[in-house]
Image (cartoon, rainbow, N blue to C red; front, side):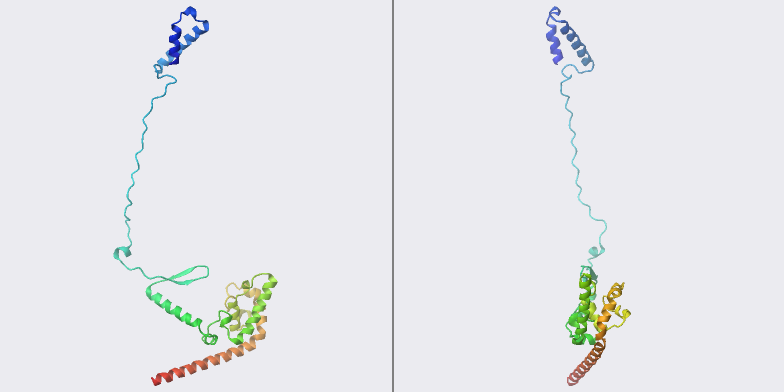
Length: 249
C-alpha cells in the first residue's frame, strides 16, 4: 500500500523535477509492484497486510460413558450365601497374624483360649505336675529360684564382658526351662527353649550355663522329686474328696 502511494505521489511530479535517485527509485517500485501483482499480493493483500483468519476447529467434548456392570459376579452375593466367620488365631510380636476359619473352629479356639487362661492362673506346683515348662521366673518352684539366679548372673556377666544386651545371650524363659529340665550335657541343653535351631547360642554360651547350673543339679533333682510326690498326693486327695461328695449326692 505504501509503495502504491509513493508511486502515485511521484508520478504527479514532472520527470524533470525528479532527481536521478528518485527516478531510479520510482522504477524499482514499479518493478516490485508488478512482481507483487503477479503473485496475487497486490491490492491491499500484499506485504504488511494481515492474513485472513482461519476458522478455529473446536474439538467435540469426549462422551463420558457410564460404567458398565461387571460381567462376573460372586456366587456368594448372587445366591445370598452367608460369609464364613473368621478370627485371628495367633498374632506374633511383629504383628504377623494367623487367621482361623468357621464358627465351629472359632468356638474351639475360644475354649482353648479359656483353658490357657486358666493355666496361667495355676500355681507353679500345678504347672510342674502337669508337665508344663515355665515361661519365666514367676512360674518356677521356690526350690528352683537359686539356680535361676545363678544362670541369670552368669548371663549378665558375659553380656557386660562382651558389651551387648543380655537378651542376645539368653532370655529369662530359656534360663527358667534350663532350671526345670536340669541338663548336664550340651545335647540336652539344645532341647531347652531358645537353645535349639541353629545352635549358635549353645555353641557360644552352652558350656558357661552348664557350669553355672552344675552346683545346683543334685538339689534341683531332689526338689523335683519332692514336688512330683506333693502334686500326686494333692491330686489323689482331690480325687478322694470329689468321690466322697459324689457318693453323698
